[in-house]
Amino acid sequence: MSALSDRLKSWPLYLLPHHLCSRLVFRLTRIESSLATPAIKLFCRVFNVDMSQAANPDPASYPSFNAFFTRPLADGARPLADDHDGMCSPVDGRVSEAGTIEAGKIFQAKGHHYSLLQLIGGRREDAAPFENGKFATLYLSPRDYHRIHMPLAGTLTAMHYVPGRLFSVAPHTVRVVPGLFARNERVVAIFDTEAGKLAMILVGAINVAAIETVWAGLITPPNGRAIIHRDYTDDAPTLAFGEEMGRFNMGSTVILLAEQNVRWIDELSAGNPVQMGQPMGSFTREGI
Image (cartoon, rainbow, N blue to C red; front, side):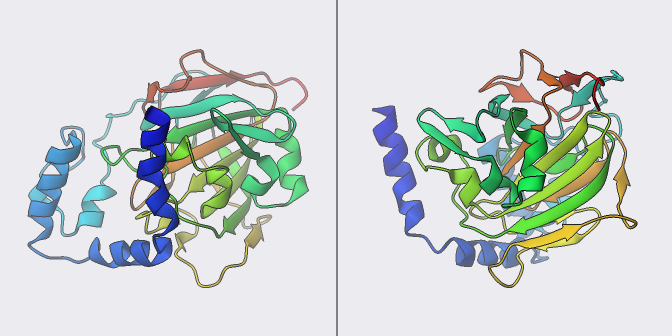
């Protein structure tokens, strides 16, 4: 019965004009108006948003809905894991799935896998380090903190914008839409780290009207439908462990890809909550 319910809730998404809806949300959430305050308060009640850890806990102080949605946390609200051979969660959210990449395929949900090569943007040299490596799919709900941080210190080597659909990434949709994460619009950032190569894939979704990174600013929505590749050499930004690397202007999903020498902690399993800064894995340095 639950599978039928998932399909009934998800099939209308095939009919919606995903990008038109999201562009409308983009404009509406940036309007500075006195109407923003009641909208924010209603959102907090409906989604049970905890404002006590926000740098500014007063909903009436935000000039627009997007300013509230991308709010920073108070200093010290997310202490970083103290482990020299460890990785921390880059976000607040919940584990959708985590495990090993097998034969170039990543597990999405029961009955569904998708292509590593397709997810990462189609370049085999980018996918190669993650063959038989690790993945973790982290879902950010509407109530979560929506800034994204570095799980390890790293130097950016490549960033790709990959156009696509904007299906919802809510759990019921993930369970029924084949290859969802490799079909949705996304930004792929690849880093050199102490643990080897690390990829962070910021997946767009319906009403996720924009994705930003700290080095490139607003990346989506772009003009055109072609994949945009950019490699970084002399101008490569280096980000510290726990430093902000980007944000969603509405909620979505982050997928981490790591090499074989990374081991996720046992608690990083489907359905478990995560908080930015908490331990999520460790790595060995041999062969790096």
